[in-house]
Image (cartoon, rainbow, N blue to C red; front, side, top):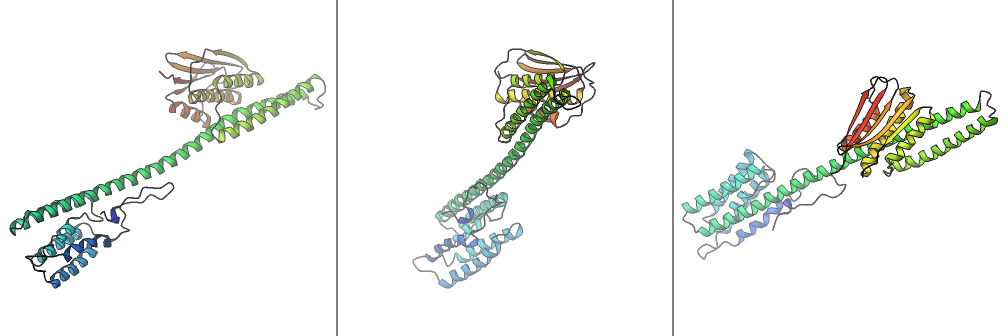
Length: 374
């Protein structure tokens, strides 16, 4: 029978992780062992009841006082229990019950203290039984109970502590997963809205120019402006759908689709583009999405900041690596690594890839590379 004090209750989902052993059973759970003292039979004559009653009274005081003690108070309580057993032996053949109490691990004792208590109790019992020329049955009984039950309690305590630590790690993993998911959504929304809003802004400006200064919208320019505005509406509707997908984690644009979208955006902004796309190898969804986001972010940054007139986009496969290179002939210079570049680097790094930004004369070269699966 294992006292409730040391029973394990596995952690439940969403529950607060308990710290340390469970003392809800209190010192009462041990007292059933005192029933052994009611069966004293020494040399065929029942021992005097008053001796057992006095020993039990003294034991209860020590037991309740030292139950949650540690350090010197713990050792004093264990020594007192052992002494009560020695004092009762002349009157009760079952006085070794107090030796068993003395050898149990303390409720708050460290593992080191508990092991020392077990060892010293067994050694003390052996010495006392030898000096008193008592039967080896006594020593065998005390040794089996103290070592067996004490070891079981320590093992259950270790398991409980391990489960508590594991539950704490599970909660920490869940917390970090939520943080990572929020960061993923933030990166996706930044990449998505940055590219889409850039397209909307470019097309809206083009429509405004086609309408003319007087705003009449007559003639061919008016028809072209209407076409551009319809495309703005289409881009806006598509952006809304993609935002919804990004929020639930379903957005996963392909690399070729992203390259075509960037090419369309750059041409709408009046830039000359050149595409060099080799046959793509088999990519995982995560790899393709990371490279696609790199192309989208690069194109958006060129339109916003580069002041370029020509852009070259290359997708190459070399030495078990797939590489995306985006070159422009803009103003170049040092780049401020904002949220877009930081999110791009985080995606690639998570897939054992890398991101490089190099200065050209003139312009800038962005290189995003990922290793292919063997």
